[in-house]
Image (cartoon, rainbow, N blue to C red; front, side, top):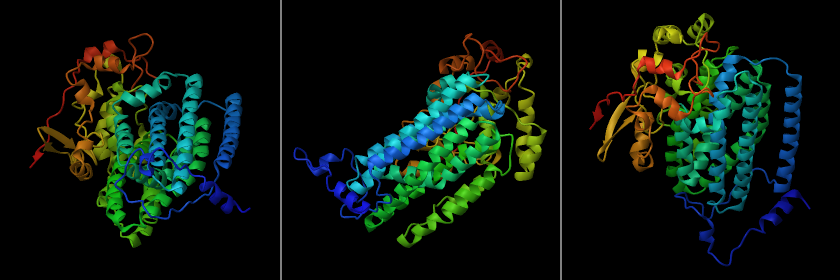
Amino acid sequence: MKISEAYDRVKDIDWETSYITEEQKTVETTKFHLDGVKPNDPFKTFVREYCEQELEKDDRHYALLEAASRLNTGEPDGRWMEGMKFGLSNLVGVEYAAARAMGRMARTVAPVELRQGYMMQMLDEMRHSNLEMNVIRHHMRSWKDPVGFDVAAKAGACSVGSGIFRSMVEDLITSDPVETSIGLQVFVETAYTNLFFVGLSAHASAHGDDMLASTLLTIQSDEARHMANGWATLSTLMQDDRNIPLIQDAMDKWSWRIHTSFGMGNMLFGDYFVRQRTESAKEMTMRWVFDDFYGGFYQKLEKFGIKPPPHLDDMISDLDWMSHSAAIYIFGAWPTFFHRYDGLNDDDFEWFEKKYPGFYEHFGPFWEAYNICKDPEEGRLILKEMGGLPNFCQVCQRPTIFPRPDITKERARKFGDQTFIFCSDGCESIFTKEPHHYVGYKNFYDLYEGMELSEVIKTLGFVRDDGNTLMAQPELEPKRMWTLDDIRSVDYVVQRPPVPPIKP
């Protein structure tokens, strides 16, 4: 029997219920129209075959990790390893949310061909979470300062920087289930997969982190299936003309949402947590995201009536300054994190000025101030010197300093009896279309306004075992570590900045 015939026979054994209706099988409803469509199944893979493939990949991967840990080929780069405390704390949560999203899709979409792909992807995402937790476990046991790796899961749920990624995944898993598929499979896993898995694994290898490099590569082997799932979903939806405006709205929204979260995170790590650089994060993003995805994949959709994202020009122009604006936020707020930082040196300045002309003019003063505020004996805290944290966007939870602090697009508007702040046209337009989806988000000020900074740090739990020394430090090898006592002596109280002009 041919595999296609065997596959069709298995599909015929789909679950037919006698005690509930067909509609009651789908736990959640969707605004998209799926009745009468003929889905495209890109793989025709049996669950047994899928499990065998994944087991083989795991056997190879864990054998490689075991060999690498025994050989101990040398100490990884400190800038990279400390940055991974923050990076991995967010990545695991994104993978777990993706598993939940695919579970929703499998329980919402009727065609068995699509459900099969979603179910396998759900298992993939759980595998990825476990793989990444295993990397955290390894680094916690082997890195010279494991503090920060040991709180990764908790930190991903409460740190101020992680709010950007939490807002992304919470938006994904609470949107319409089919819209979730578009956001995840089309944008995260098609548009940004090469930038993340190829780019980040290359950085990991260049900085001696063989564990993460191998992990990302074995995950990348699953991403091809996820991209195919995304195209199968889109091609199925586009068979019904009623879905075209719904797809357009979802594509417009998620092109911007992923740009301001996952895209920004990729650029931050590609520019600021590496020492061995070749391409800039801007160059990699232009090539893999805007040339390949928006210049290639997106064009296939034009014949169905799908138009380019309305904020595409802003997304491209943002690349000039996005990583740098994100960096001064992350570095400026260092006490509220849980890893060591490595400020820029002369080599970094020269490289950034070459790749981003005008860099030093716009960001040099911050780094000069940062470098003289690292010693606790001086009693100067960069967070206080820069005037405190900025406002945060109600939709994406980014600070409102983008694309660059001196040309910010911050604005405010009223909804009901509340005032909400946004970082951009893109986020404001998303809020306008479904405000009730975002009014409940709480930002840093909602939680900690009026608190003295050392109390905030204690509340977050980012203190070492002695109960006084901070997990985070503004440099890799400080002469003396900052403590809660040092923070208290600075006398910094969290205060919300003024509200920008309110739009009528």
